Amino acid sequence: AFLENVVTHRNFLSGEYNTSFIDTTPELFVFPKRKDRGTKMLSFIGETIVNGYPGLEKVKKPVLTKAVVPKLKYTEPIPAGTKQLLDERGAEGLAKWVKEQSNVLLTDTTFRDAHQSLLATRIRTHDLKQIAEPTARMLPNLFSLEMWGGATFDVTMRFLHEDPWERLLTLRKQVPNLLFQMLLRASNAVGYTNYPDNVIEEFVEKSAAAGIDVFRIFDSLNWVEGMRLAIDSVGNSGKLAEAAICYTGDILDSARPKYDLAYYRNLAKELEQAGAHILGIKDMAGLLKPEAAYQLITELKSAVDIPVHLHTHDTSGNGVYMYAKAIEAGVDIVDVAVSSMAGLTSQPSANSLYYALSGTKRQPDVNIDALEQLAEFWEGTRSFYAGFESGMNAPHTEVYEHEMPGGQYSNLQQQAKAVGLGSRWNEVKKMYRTVNDMFGDIVKVTPSSKVVGDMALYMVQNELTEQDVYEKGEKLDFPDSVVELFQGQLGKPYQGFPKKLQDIILKGRKQLEGRPGESMPPVDFEQIQKELFEKLGRQVTSHDLLSYALYPKVFLDFEQFRQQFGDVSVLDTPTFFYGLRLGEEIEVEIEQGKTLIVKLVSISKPKDDGTRIVYFELNGQPREVVIKDLN
Ligand code: 3PY
Ligand code: ZN
Image 1: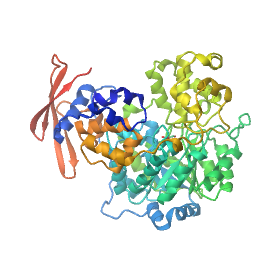
Image 2 (image 1 turned 90 degrees about the vertical axis):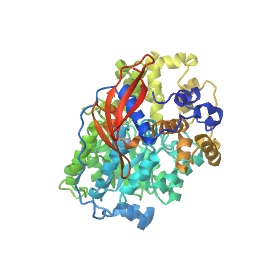
Image 3 (image 1 turned 180 degrees about the vertical axis):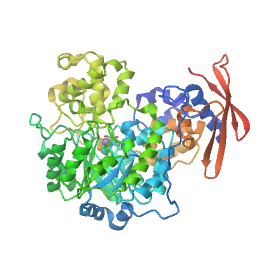
Image 4 (image 1 turned 135 degrees about the horizontal axis):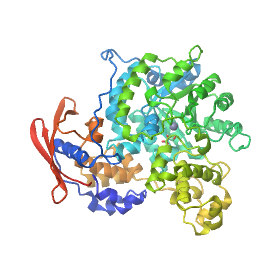
């Protein structure tokens, strides 16, 4: 409803990575006449009232109470934490400090992976801002706060219409004491495709300068060659490179020997040699079982000198038990979320883990009362996002079968619905496993997991069995992402691709030699700065340039949105998603000390041209906006 030109343009839809887009389609960059901030905001609220928020069912605005922010002595100084330690000791010094701790250390993922996995990444900066400083004050002993990267970069711009860099800078000011951690998909940065090397280098440098301290770097096929550039870039920035191995399969299943203890041990050593300060184990689907965790951590602790940091998803319900075993084996840091944002496809609960470790020497040094107060805030806040819940409400042990990452489950379910396979979801999950086996049992995590999902949907939709693919493959037109994977555009899987299937899929197309990023022409940042300056008519920052280099269409779409509706991140979340009820009045702080009072007075019937007039009061003065009713 909001954006017609740019987003529906054929080149945009094709999703091609191409920064000459502005030059070749100037007609799309005629932005609407400038309006004042109040009118822009009323236009956005009016749109939401009349047409609803895209992707959410249009319902009457629920009555939601404000989440409770803990009452603290905010005038007292914020206690020092790991951020100060990093500044004093440097990356290696900090890694050494981690190893000296006897308690297990915690990373809180509530600001990133927890809501990526439970609420389609939709938590807005407006809510994070309320609880950032209380978190800094109440949990000063955390190892880190994971709060950026993964899918958040894309979703903030695309769906929340806010700037991911502003989120980082804003939270950094409020949390001066904790390490900020992000998830970096190595050569895919925070995207789903490979980028030229200079984009990765520039992205790491600017993210470090804006406030990221720990970069968890992974490759979606565990291909170390694909991770070196990112590890080196982080090393050069003086920040912590946490190189992560994605855990797949089951080391205790002798029928499935591909990913055994030796595989993980060798990878760990390679990553340590590549310059990692911390070794991450990224159990993105939650497949690591308790006894396997004990053996894996024991093995890795003896293989490397750097600290080991374990990440999981609690989909099976075995997360806390698994962590307890990993902690017994000496893992240094584990990822948890505040309890009301934990469990299921999210991380295990910090609050539960605290109690589970009662009476042991390694119980984390956190204030449980603080965790309970934070849980109360998040319980209230989570209710604003009810429309994004996945519907999973109990542990799913079937994850051990399909092996789908926590963050993919609800996405693939949506994708299945969108192509009319909603009622055949069980078949899709089974096919996901079949495709994995056909592909040679590969690591499945963004973006390789998406390719497995695309192929599974394709096969179910076209009523194809594994046998059919081998027999009729020559005549089949496989999804682009599948062809690209088999060309080597996401790197190389351990032990290569199955040759027979690769020939069927590639049909004579060339395979890529070497690293994809190496052969891509570098992005000319000066050139795109000039182009963007001319087309947008404003100074563009180095952050804008990176957003554009990573997501050209999403960035320009967001830019057009901002021109039309202004900065909507100032709105409270229920108003952002549901607009206003008749007669409802809200206060909106548009900048410090400047507040607008907005009241919805009435909505007209649609006119012949399908428009409605929405009548407001803005600071007591009558105002109206005309909105096209798309229902
Ligand atoms: C991401 O890449 O966003 C993930 O969280 C993968 O697990
Ligand atoms: Zn995760």
